[in-house]
Image (cartoon, rainbow, N blue to C red; front, side, top):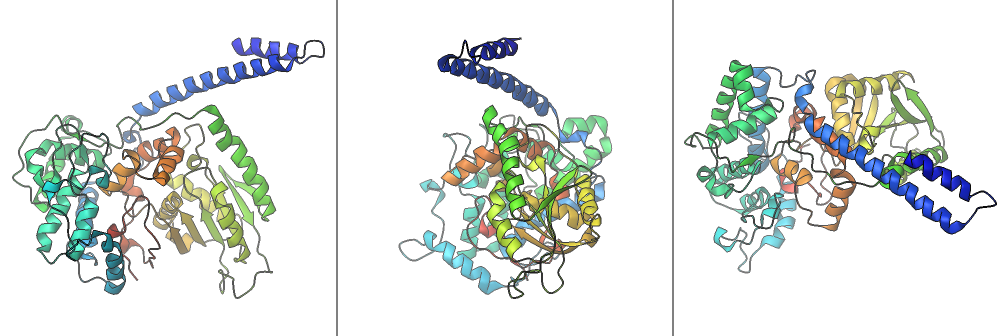
Length: 502
């Protein structure tokens, strides 16, 4: 009713007999204020609803559906740190020599220069000096947090140290485990037995390996799974050298629960969503048409297609000699807008057909509409089949690489090649990656911008916390033969956590 009265008054004031610009501006601002108020209430209600949802409602995702699968997933996770710090292949939990030690050592030497002390030795400063802040481990939720070494610091130290590798690896496991916890009772990772108890570890395992459940829920609903939970807890503690951990639970220590904790969001005004949902799609429509693409639809998937072209210089043609179609999948953000220059250059150097699908759930659409991974893969298969193709060269950036990972797992015959830029699926369950993206404090201007425009937006955070399953989306190095290039420091993943294999 209020909006009707405002529009009625605006209409009366724009008539020839009553027109006055000052009054028109006045009612325009009132209208926009009312619209912002209504939108704020809508977002508030959406936030309340999404905070009540958990991933336990998704019963179709059965990657962790059996005891054998959960056990294998846990063992692979525990082997991750050993594989990273030793720089080799997975083999019974041990890692052999690095496949390309000269490349790895060159990277280490360049990064370690900043850590060389005045006497020419490489190493961490003593813990008592307190120079390494918690922000290094991306857990800075407040100012009064005890400072300690991060996993990144330990990895740098291990590469330059001649000490006991097994002892340093054990410390690395403690820091990895401790990073999943926060609260007033959390102490130093090197003194983990003084503040962490067995039930706290059970809570962490139940949340990430039993689809967001709690130990109490498993004890009541499935005694068999609760027994399995205790076995997994013993396995984790044995691997970490913490079998003498005390029974019980430290109530002052909380687990970072991605699937059920309140969503860490920051409100955005209506004009932001007007830009992402109206202006950006309009700009994309005009730019993609100018680049020679035309828009098509396959079921619920809208995509852009550019036909083959014969004016590409054979010396620059990246599709030669086979000429497979190429599918580019964008990442989180505002859709295709950040990729216009890249798509333009790619179009100039690719003679084969180009497909660019649009995913609103990756582009800050102001509503919850997140398809399942199988649904997305089926839509992409239908897109290729509609043009007579069974497979393609897949190219993605950031979260778009996760989508390509779904295709590689669920429809490997659809993949001829895959090119992944800043892939997000290789360190999905890494403790520092999770906590830095969702709860960490921004340390640079880039991190401030990327957090506001992506990782604090309601529907993007809902995708990452309530509709994203790490066990389904993560990939391990042995699952994909890749040639890795480390071009610069990444904003979220540290180079010391990356293995380059050929």
